[in-house]
Amino acid sequence: AQTVTQSQPEMSVQEAETVTLSCTYDTSENNYYLFWYKQPPSRQMILVIRQEAYKQQNATENRFSVNFQKAAKSFSLKISDSQLGDTAMYFCAFMTGETSYDKVIFGPGTSLSVIP
Amino acid sequence: NAGVTQTPKFQVLKTGQSMTLQCAQDMNHEYMSWYRQDPGMGLRLIHYSVGAGITDQGEVPNGYNVSRSTTEDFPLRLLSAAPSQTSVYFCATRGGGLQETQYFGPGTRLLVL
Image (cartoon, rainbow over all chains, first blue to last red; front, side):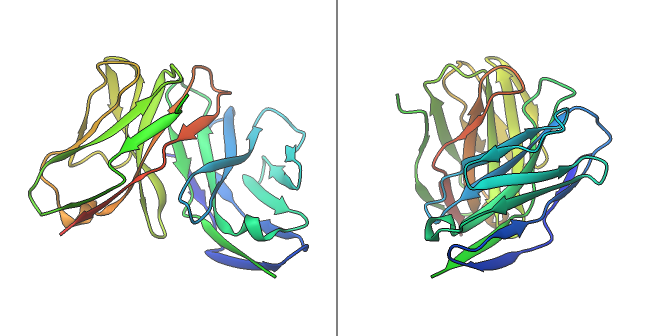
C-alpha cells in the first residue's frame, strides 16, 4: 500500500524568505503523480503544484517549486519570497498511475506560518 | 458554474442518528470521492466513484454508505452516527484521465455528541 509521510508538523518562515517542506512516500509503482495542496484557514483545498513521476524535470509554479527525487521517493516543496497569504496547512499527496481509479493518498500535513 | 457544492456546512448529531451529506458537481466529472479530515491525519479516503452506478471503498469505509445514481450527485450516508465520526468531510471530483486536477468542495463539519 502507498503511504505518504510529512515529518514536519509545523514550520515557520520570515516574510520574503524561502522555506522547504519535506515529503516522502512509499510505493512499488513506477507510474504515479504527486501533488502539493494548500489549505488556508478557510478550509478550502487548493492545488499548488503537481508532478508526474515519468517527468525528470521538476515542476514550478511561480514562487513554488518542487525537488522530485524518484529514487529516494522524496518530493519537497520550496516556497520562495514567502508571503503572509502562504500561511496554511500544506498536504503532500500521491495518486496511483497504474489504474484509472481516483485514489489520492494524503500525508498528515505541515502547518506553515509566515511571520511578518 | 458552481463547481463542487456540499451541504450542510455544519451539522450536530446525536449518537445513533442517521444523516446524509450532500455533494453535487456541475463539471460533468466522472470521478467523485469522499474524504474525512482529522487533526494530524490529513485526508483519508472513505468511498469513491468512477461513474454513475459504480462505487468502491477507500481507506476508512466503515459506518458510511454511498451511491451514485447520477453523474452530478454523490451523497454520503451515515447510518448510525458515532462520536468517532466527528470530522470535517470533503467531497472531491475529477474529470477523466490521470492528468486531471482534483477539485474539492468547501467541506462539511460534523459533530457527533
